[in-house]
Amino acid sequence: MVPLKTLSGKIARYFNVLLLVMAAAFASPAAEPGVGPKDGGAVRVMSFNVRCTSVRGHPRGERVDSVVRAIEAVKPDLLGVQEATPEWMADLAARLPDYAWVGVGRDDGAGKGEYSAIFYLRGRFEPADSGTFWLSDTPGTPSRSWNSFFRRICTWAVFRDRATGGMFLHMNTHFDNAYTPRKNSVPLILDMAARHDGMPVVCTGDFNTPEVSPLYAALLGGTLDNAKFLAADTMSVITTTGGFPLRRLGCFAIDHILVNDKAEPLVYRVVTGTFDGMLPSDHYPVYCDIILRFI
Image 1 (cartoon, one colour):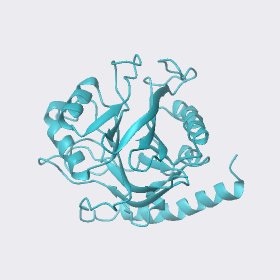
Image 2 (tube, rainbow, N blue to C red):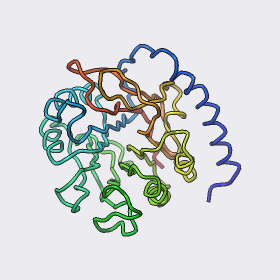
Image 3 (tube, one colour):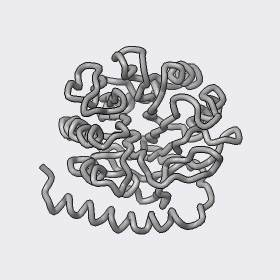
Image 4 (tube, rainbow, N blue to C red):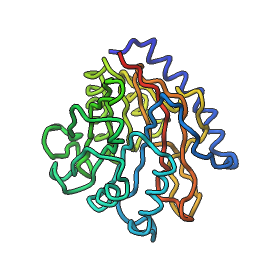
């Protein structure tokens, strides 16, 4: 249980920041930020909902190059993807040869359905353990509960840094659209984070949960915090959703990178640029450079 003082402090701090961020959202869009160089000791973590199929006349096959170029521009060490169909997984695996990945399809725990896979630089990390659990009453088996629209999953891996031997947990997830499934998914994520609190924890995902939502406050009710507001160098852009036509902004940030107190965010960015003349997805990818504090 997190002390009430700690939790109320988090909420108060985010409320003040959100007032500033919401004001920025109604102002004219700022110049698009470039992808900057990374601190040599940091790990660059990226979260990207690639959109499973067509986006208002922009089919998956038309967007593959744009998605890959966005990833190549960021050069993440770790990449959590959402809505990655088997076709997407085949494309990404073929086009990103420096990366290996962990994950399963949500429909059968094998190759069917969307993946919430984690791609990792094979030369820097190796998985010591990995798995997937379902956001349901029976997390160990392919399932859905609470009248969710779809089966939803969280893929996780405990990685070992090949250079230092340090271990850390990376979770990647995609919450349901409906409120009750999202509410009941929060404890599953927090429990996994708490069970690995002796090491750095990073959780990426499309949480379908904006920063003004009570469920967002619940996500921060355990050991996790939002890297966006912890990073010294961050962005005052409220939205991570784009869509079509180009440069149309959404309303709220729903794609988050969460960390525990053994992960120190340095730089946080939302990648709002276009690649090959188009937005690669209806979500902007986000990334954060993080120092992992190994014990």
